[in-house]
Amino acid sequence: MKTIKRKTLLYKTGVEYGDYTINIAEGCSHGCKYPCYAMMMAKRFGKAKTYEDWCSPKLVSNALELLDKEIPKYKSKIQSVQLCFTTDPFMYNYPEISDMSIKCIKKLNNNGIKCTALTKGILPKELAELSKENEYGITLISLNEDFRKEIESGSAPYKDRINALRYLHDKNCKTWVSIEPYPTPNFIEQNLSDILNEISFVDKIIFGRLNYNAKVSQYKDYKKFFNEMANLVINYCKSNNKQYHIKEGTITEETKED
Image (cartoon, rainbow, N blue to C red; front, side, top):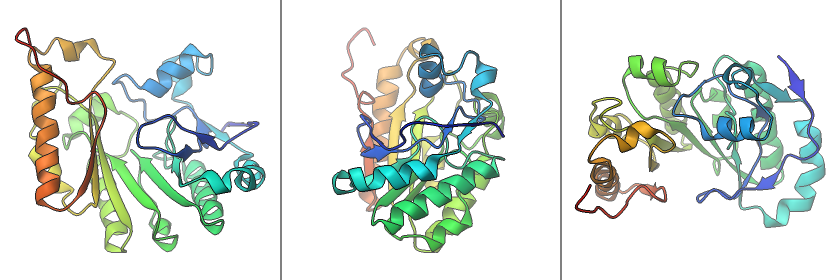
């Protein structure tokens, strides 16, 4: 695959539930059409000219060398490092990216740094052999494969993601699921409880609404809908002794016009 070199890798993220992060690739083959915020920013700053360009990822070939330089500089400040915020660390059908991610996690763990990973790909079984302080997650916004093929065409099948996550759970790893960006019923009619029941084994659930899509506001009761779905997640997690995080802006005040 194509490669690039960067001058820096580790940086402090502004994401509400994040600390430090690394992005070991530029672009993402999953081709999410929510639209993808990372792709929009890449196009805005000239890192990807087209959707097709974004879907042709480039591996950061000097990622390990950069970590060797940057870990001593930031180690005392880091609580955890997330892979990744603008790409996918275990991109489906890209073993080169997965291999680099595992090497980066090992290097960070060897320096006493906990890692958190989130993917729409397949979490490798080798992760079970790394630090038990690490946390491994998948994004899961539906169980409908036709919807996945439409909205996340290059990503891993939902059941394959869940099975890989379950394997790590069974190996006593910390696991979580990001149900974000969750779609309104005018995208797909589905039952959120079915998704929650399918991932009942995980330790933590993050839930967030779909943004940056005009079709959401076309759904008349979208504020009420997201409030209800967020409260469903909260009640489920409280009843089942799970950690949870509701993304900022998901729960909103409803008005009479809504």
